Amino acid sequence: MHSPNKFCSFENNYFHIDENKKLAEELKLYFGNPKTDFMWKLITNRQKMAHALRHTEMVVLRKPVGDFSTIKSTNQANQIMTVADTDILTKTLLFQEMVAWLEQSLINAGANKVEWGRIFFSKHFANSDIDIHTDQGQYFDYYDRFHFVIDQTDNENIFHIRDEDVKLLQGNLYWVNNHVPHWLKNTSNKDRINLIVDARIL
Figure 1 (cartoon, rainbow, N blue to C red):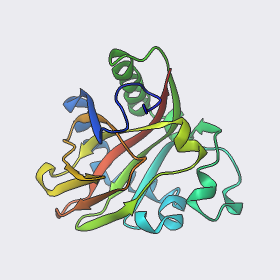
Figure 2 (figure 1 turned 180 degrees about the vertical axis):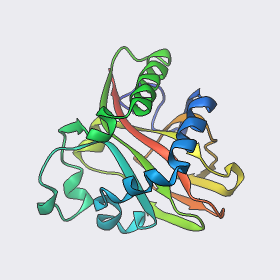
Figure 3 (figure 1 turned 30 degrees about the vertical axis):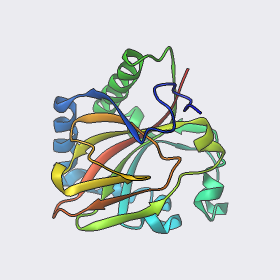
Figure 4 (figure 1 turned 60 degrees about the horizontal axis):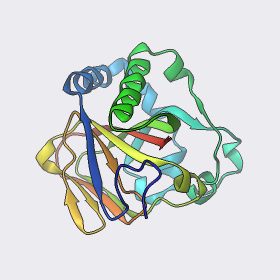
């Protein structure tokens, strides 16, 4: 069985795609500015609906289209297939340049075309866990998940996927197997920030 992106089989837990330390540093500085703190409070449904994600916040660049007042669980949310850009993406040049780099990285890795799903920054709080979970639903059957690590203490953040402790390094882009049980542990005294990208590779 292979993932839609054809880069690797579901037997793999992760796959390194590209590196961009300069971009990671620019994004780290962007979110290090206190003037951007409000962005983490704009959309809070993910951490409220999913108990496993209660120690996180998000800044959303592409999101599902629909009336979220009627959605009570992540299982319901993961059936929504229509996704659209947010104003944050359309009005922020740095984020647009980041998406362009992501697309080129996936093309360099073998894609002919990239179809974007959700894209968001995730903040995982210092000294906290993201509980074990598996991403399921129509949405995740269609899209694969990628992580670009922006700001973390590399040796104090563990991403456990299935049966392996994986260290995703700052400034690097990875495909991750979110179709199997996985959890994260941030043992450092600083929040971890990474970009989570869902894409279908054509």
